[in-house]
Amino acid sequence: MTIISDYEEKKEPDKILAKRIIHDVGSTGQPPVYGYQYFTAGIDRYINTIDEEYLCDYISCGGSSFKLVIGTYGGGKTHFLYSVQGRGWLNNYVTSYVELSADSTPFHKLETVYRSIAENLIYPQKYEDLHSGYERGIESLIKYWYSRKRNKLEESGLDEDEIRDSLIYYISKIGPYASTSFQNALKHSFLALADDDYEKFSLIIQYLKGENLSKTVLKEYQIFEKIDRPNAFKMIRSLISWIKEIEFKGLIVLMDEAEQTPSMTTKQRETLLNNLRELIDACSKGTIGGSMIFYAVPDENFLEGRTAVYEALNQRLQTVFDGEINPSGVKIDLERSELEPEELLTEIGIKLSKIYETAYGVTFDDKTIKQIMADTAKAAYEERFGEIGYKREFVQRAIKELNALKVQVQR
Image 1 (tube, rainbow, N blue to C red):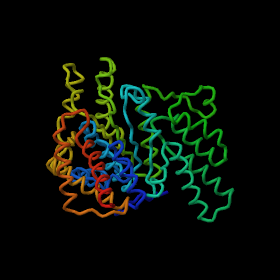
Image 2 (cartoon, one colour):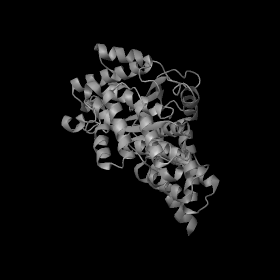
Image 3 (spheres, rainbow, N blue to C red):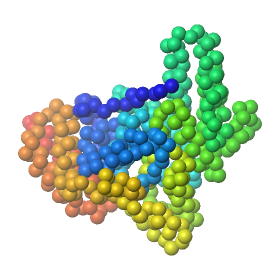
Image 4 (tube, rainbow, N blue to C red):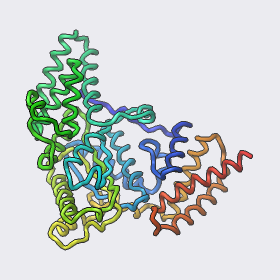
């Protein structure tokens, strides 16, 4: 079963999407999961290199890679990760964007990381579906997988009994994966859909989501392993293997650190660093082939220490990714833009003004817009040492300026 990506990017946003972009950016300074591309600037060289060097063939042919993304809070980390995600969908990858935090998804607890990856899986979807409320999570992916397989059998002209026999034969051949319990859970969830047994399906999905159920409940399905810290990496490897087997090209995981590590204890921080080292080594050794992992942090302060784990990590993270000049480098510094900071902000502002015109049916004078955005860029960059990243500060100010200009134009 070959799955062809349904995802595509429209050349221009329509009115509703444009208005959503303006509201999202103006209120929180955050880009929408779809629509970010219409005001992207300064990162094309990075994104194009990731696409050409990794996504086109290397990852899909069993390679794996880890990249450390460095950008201040409000400095464009999420926008960059969404840009990678979009390229992933265009290349028919499943993606998972995960916000790491001490409360909900601490990286020192790998079982919660698996849980978040499973909860946030998104397969390539049509623009309309992403725009109106996209499907996400392992439950949606399994249903999509099953429906695609069943639809193909129906199109071949088989009767209902033949379809069922074909589905049973097909699912008996999947695997093997690192975790037999994960493999059995997938098989029984697939069969539950074939039997319209939604109670059974819901039960097994709870396990695949990382919810630890009673051993007695799962025993009849040959599911014996808990999804806990010792088994978390095994489950992630199994997840990637399954995604590749159902003929997506692989999995792209985008981890965005929402809180700084000082909120952790010394033991938690060391566990986090060890987990990170283990993840980097798994990528370099090819034990999680078919995956690309991005880990976004506000700075490199978490690497400052004198113990062995700090030294080991620093050695692994010392090379700099610099687009086509050094595509094998690990660190991606979002401050190393193709443009000077104020020039970059001005370009973003001009792109936002075009989106604004579409959203509200107004037309601005180009010269006026350039001057407003240049002035706003200068003011935002002067506050770059404040609590809010200057890029986020700029886009919020830019929308405020556009609102004021719209009022003037419509008088």
